[in-house]
Image (tube, rainbow, N blue to C red; front, side, top):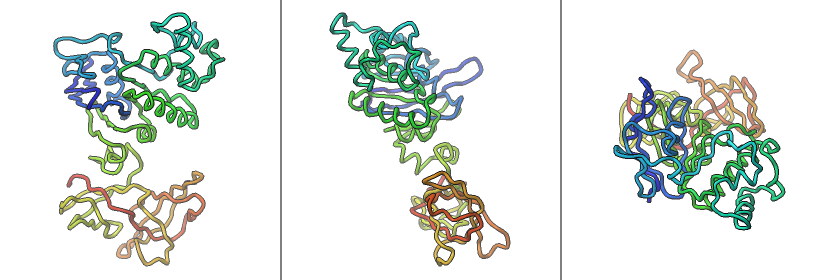
Length: 351
């Protein structure tokens, strides 16, 4: 069952088209991430769902209730949708408790108990209730903002790049905490971000936007492994893309002969491999393609290597590729190696 249905949403600002025929289904209780570069329309779409903007055409339905169509639009305060902005947007003149309790119907002891329950749910100590927003760290402010949104028992939670201002380590911890909390509460969630790794790790469903259009949606692993086009492939991570001749489930390319997910296609096409699918071995290994390591980018537990292919029939060096290797055992620049492929290459539409 789907909690949210977007159908043919269109929005223009003057001559600029912000959203162009966007349709998306969000399953109940899921975490959907809308990802795309700056200007792709993802934040406009989120504001449309929240009720801060209204479409020029299309409809929006939440739990069977039509929020927007050609005849009417439910205002934001009546939608029962929680919203956590990038900066938290806490009221600076209110304490933590007052921020969380803003808008609560309960009074007296019931209100205090509800605030304490919400603080505990987002891992905030009880003694922080009397603090002011400026006395909190960035992560603590985001947790207060999330507790305030949860206080309204929303039918849908919208997260607008809430982790982008946090340090890298804290960002990952907050992302995991928020995912666990929302899953336990059974709240359907939509996160907007431009961070690819954040999108892949947080989402049950991933929706990629580009130039105001929804170009592909589905399970994060499926989009990472089987993107529809090269732009999507490179946006979701490093990719090795090269031309190939496809026949009978195999590709003849600069790496030699590699298996592909061709679905019976034969002919010229572009194929894609992720760097982790390229395996290095010693140059004495008879299997694979000859190559030479030209650059080594050490990153601790992993190392990204740039290697140049050395086809036996070519007088000059061939294509340069990125390969990931263990940081402890990565060969130095200048090393002769063999490259082999793990798994199958993905075939884009024929050229």
